[in-house]
Amino acid sequence: MPEFNADNLPSRHFINHIINEDLKLGKYNQKVHTRFPPEPNGYLHIGHAKSICLNFGTAQEYGGLCNLRFDDTNPSREEDEFIQSIQADVKWLGFDWQDRLYFASDYFEELYQIAVQLIKDKKAYVCDLTQDEMREYRGTPTVPGTLSPYTSRSVEENLDMFARMRAGEFQDGEKVLRLRIDMASSNFNMRDPVIYRIQHSYHQRTKNDWCIYPMYDFAHPLSDALEGITHSICTLEFENHRPLYDWLIANTDVPCKSRQIEFARLNITYTVMSKRKLRRLVEESFVSGWDDPRMPTLAGMRRRGYTPEAIRNFCEKIGVAKSNSTVEIEMLEYCIREDLNYAANRVMAVLDPIKVVLTNYPENGETLMGSNNPEKPEEGQRELSFSKELYIEASDFMEEPVKGFHRLMPGGEVRLKSAYIIRCDEVIKDETGKIIELRCSYDPKTKSGNDQSGKKVKGTIHWVAAKTAIDAEVRLYEHLFCKENPDDLDEGEEFTDYLNPASLTVIPNAKLEAGLAKADIGDSYQFMRQGYFIKDKDSTQNKPVFNRVVSLKDSWGKMQKK
RNA sequence: UGGGGUGUCGCCAAGCGGUAAGGCAACGGACUCUGACUCCGUCAUUCGUAGGUUCGAAUCCUCCCACCCCAGCCA
Image (tube, rainbow, N blue to C red; front, side):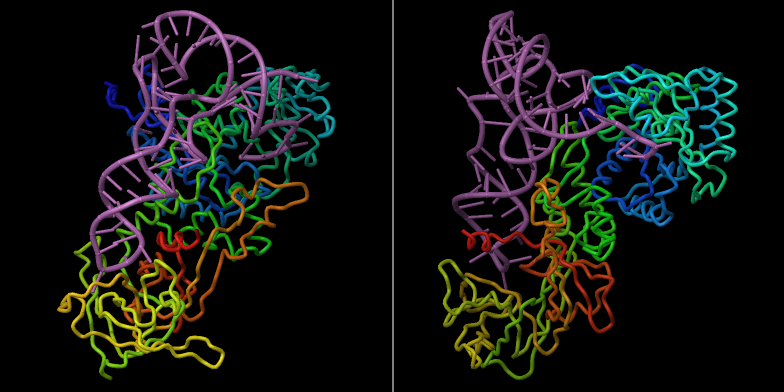
């Protein structure tokens, strides 16, 4: 009995269509089994998240399984740090491989035996050509390659040579094992591809057991088959490798006819996604590390304040297809706002303070109440300390207001959120003409929640009581690059030329409402009228640090720009 | 001047011969003690181009154009 309802299969994208077709044809025993196969040579980024969501998500929706498999076939560039971080990131994203954590290196012995069988079948041979020679023999797109002189070696000699390669009798690069396919193929991957190379290096899992390592093209399809992977989902650049993938599945004795399906990798505006470039940003200290909140790495985004829900939702929204595409970063920002609007409690924080003195307010302050989250009444209310001296945002006052400005101005009134309506009576400046204080009066009849004045004001602004406010460092983040596509470069340019100098603005002494003293690292809030912020791990006992996840939408700011 | 792919609204993306979904962005407007949120409305007579088949084409055929990938003992 099929475990699926043929009339009720998911069909959001072409991969669903392919799988549905396979299921209807009764392939793979009606099972779907995928895998996420990172190489442990860097941190996972949002592009990997797309692949993770696709692989684990597809398995989930078909009631199948998804393995986590490290593609650790090149010991010279892989590190344990990445094996740890990758697992942490996949878990954080919300996926579970249960007990199916695998390594391509787990299969080294089996892969070796398969290679031996290929030699016996006269489908593989040891080749002594140097790299340069091999390049020449390979030919060009229009010129077929020429056969390696070493294809004439006997099975016995090949077997012996391959065994001696394994035994460490040769230097790095001295010999390789190649498949004997078709030197005239228009697909370079079929022109007798190398499947084993000699590399005398320490492998973090197999230690010094091996000095020959299988190539991706050999290890990947066979690992898939050995694990019973039905649908091997990878990115577009492997499309040219599919004939080789299929060749290996067809020419070896493996338990599963795994099938490779390619989709377009994710690109996002104003950032870069290649591991090489991200590594450079880290190694050359353009950012503070792999988890710098400006990085598109999952570690960076986590620290920035992105939630797994928002990222998963983003991956769902962008869809899956085969055309190269670049998603606008606004889509990502929309997803985190959507999540945090509901999830984050409201709080008041003044980033660029200007002092306000309420001349007619008593010396003793009072405690007011404010809603924690209008989207979630069940979150209740919090206490707000109010007093004669306050801070408001400098940008919420204009001595000579422009048209359309409806915040505080001389002689004008605004409401202080959750408090009173105040009027600005006097502007105090220092000798340089800089505004240092606003003398205002409050209207006691306008108390929030109990307004008996009937007054209507256009603007409501946030504030913080001077006496009880706590100081904090606030880090405002913007796009890492100031160019929409930092990969699109003219002659002589480098992508680092386009790093955004304003990608991080540090505000050393912002004023936060007192209640924020109890925030834990990782807690996120909406700083009302400004954006979403998360308490960073750099916080100390005396000085909390908050990262801006993303600003609120700002239609006033937009209107002003015009 | 080889091979493999892709071209549907500013950005993603459905569509699979029956007459262009949806999301983001944008733009109007309503609401608002967050110029936020929410809500309402506008936003492809047209599917890279040109032909053809058909009663009917984004969907089928042909030519052309543009872009991406491939000559690692990387993945």
